Image (cartoon, rainbow, N blue to C red):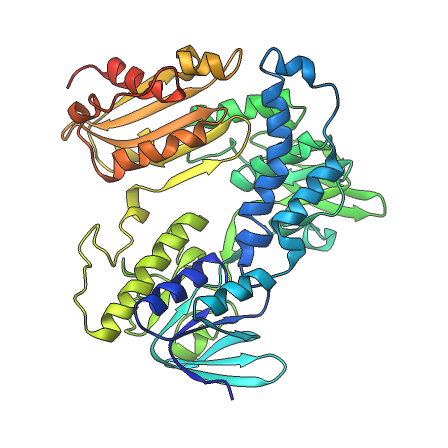
Length: 470
C-alpha cells in the first residue's frame, strides 16, 4: 500500500515541480509529485529543449556560411528530417521513463493522475482510481501555463497550433502564419523559415515589445532577410479553416493563406481545474506569492513557476523552486528563515535581475532593466551603446558580424541595472552580465575584470571605455 500522507505535495512534475520536491527531500522531508502527463513537463517535451533543437541546425548552417573556408565546404541544404529526428531524441520520443527513474533515485514519490486541492493540505488525485493525499506541511502548485488564445472570430474553430504543436510537429508545413510578436513567435518563425516554410508573422505592434527597441528592430530585419514576411501594427480580424488550410483576414483589409496557424500571443495559468475554488481562490487565476513563494493568505499553500506570473522562464521557475523547497523544509524543521532580500529562502532576482535569451538569429541576451524600465522605476541612468561587430573577437567569430550591446547604469550608485546584447551567439556573454547586475559590482571594480583577447567578452572593456572612468 502506497502512503497517502507526505510532508509536501507538489502538483506538476515539470522542471519546476521536480526542483521543489528535490529540495524538500534534501531538506529532510518526504515529497510526492502529482502529474497527469509526462514527468519532466513542458520544458522537456514541448518548450525549451525541443525548440532549441529545432533552431540549432539552421543556425549552425547560417553561421558556417559567414566564415570563409567553412562557407565553401557547405554545399547542401538543411536536412529537415534529420533535424526532426534530433528533436525527437531531445524529448526521448516523448517517453518519460528516464525522468521517472530520476524521481525514484531522488526519493520522490509519484502519483499519476489529475490532482485537485479538495481542502486545506489535501489533494484528491483522479486517475485509474481516486487517491486522497494529505500534506503535513505544504502543497505546492507548479502546474505551468498554456497558450492564450485571443478572441478572434473563427480562430478556435480553425484548430490553430500552440507552442506544443509547433515544437512537436512530425512534418513541416509549406506555409505558416504566426499570430504574435513575442519570444515564441520570433523563435518559431526563425526555426520554420530555416526549414524552408513560407512564414508570415502578424504582430499587433512591434516584435519583442518590452525589450530594448533595437533588439526587436534587428530581429525584424534578420527575419525578413531569412524570407519571413513580417507584418507590424497589424491585427487578425477573422480566421476561416478550409480543406486546403486557413485564411486570415487582417485589419488592413488584406488576407493571408497558410497551411497552419501558430498562436503565440501570451500565456494563461494552468490553474482552472486544480481546486482553487475549494480554498476561496479564483479558478484560472494567477497565484500571487510573497518572495518565499507562499501564496498570500495561506501558511501551507505555495506556488512556483509560470502560475505565479513573476517570470515565465524555466530557469527562473527552477530558481523559485529551490527557494520554496528550502524554505518549506526550514519551516517544517524549525530552522532559521533567511527571507531578507537576496537571502537563501527568497526569489529576489525575480523583480529586477531576470536573465533571458531569445534564440532568434541574431540572439538576444538580456538581464535586468531596460533603459525605459529603469527610467520608469525612477532611476537616474546613463545608457551606453556599443556595436559588437567592431571588436576583434567578433571579427574572428564571423565576417560582417552585426550586433549591439547596451549597458544601463545607475548614476547614483555607479552600478549596472541592465544589459542587453544582440548578435550571433551572445547568449554566452549573459552570465557575466547577470553576475554584474545581481552582485551590483561597482563600475570601478569592473575595470579590473580584464576580458581575454580576442574574444567576444572584449565588449565589456568597450562599454566601460565608452562610459569613462567613474
